[in-house]
Length: 370
Image (tube, rainbow, N blue to C red; front, side, top):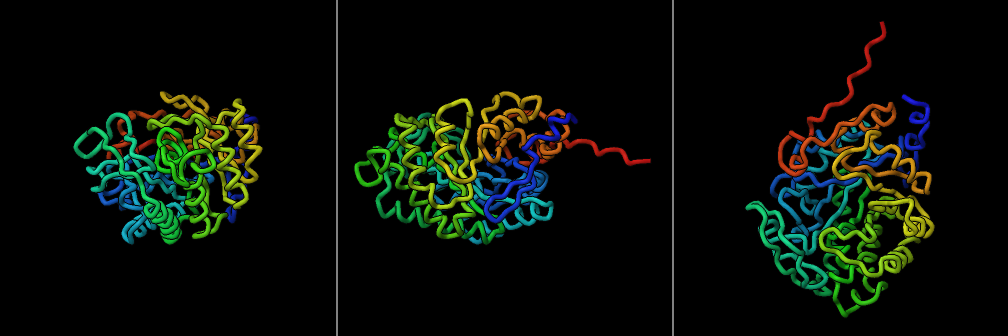
């Protein structure tokens, strides 16, 4: 272990709303497709998350607040009593291992298919997802989503609030509203997927309205100090195109910065970009930075230097994805300078069973003193 590694601010405690985190490392939400077909978390998921309980905070994978919001097969949900019971087994296992968890709430919007949810997907406008989507029968062409009515928008806002209450009943410390990566809330933000002419479409101020209403409703349901918001400015995943990114997120943060939310979670945060500095200056509370890491391998330092750079640039916490996926003991590896496991096979990220999920090795225990 080098002195610089041991002294890294990543290992200092931090306050997050009512929580004291033992370190500044966050396990980012990562879809793993291990839930039962009806969205109920299974015991294997409790094992997976408990293995990673040394993270300062775990943000559990994207979880649907209603049936129509389901994206892919075997995605967990949180809109029925059986979902609450399944997740409670997970949070109890993590808490017993000394960890803390938020649950990410995600509605897929146009990223969905009747073969997955049994329902036609909905979206701000009838603009289909490009390409195909994975279903139990393999990849199939996407379908044109149905444009949401004003009444459906209001019902969806209520569904998010109810899902947040369910998450608290399941033992989560809080929730993260997912307004990133091309899913429903991001679809309302982006001009190419939101072609509405009513109060939810048009200029940037109108396109942030749905995200604002969802976030406010969730904060009212469980307390703003237990709510985070995830955004991905400029990210083009899932066919998203933003032609006014700086103005869009300035408008969003202007609406939400006074709520007292637990945190803002910035995807692919790059401290070298002007937008990162602008968002940091505009956000008065905790900022979680999810750094840009290579997609084909985990860096030799496990993401330590990228995380330290984000903290130096003003982030308060650092979220890591694949490094936590392949390293249950990532915090200890980073602390001691031990090399990280690499993701063995990307295919195993999204298939059922323990392989590539709960079977990654941990460091050998130190030998007992004579």
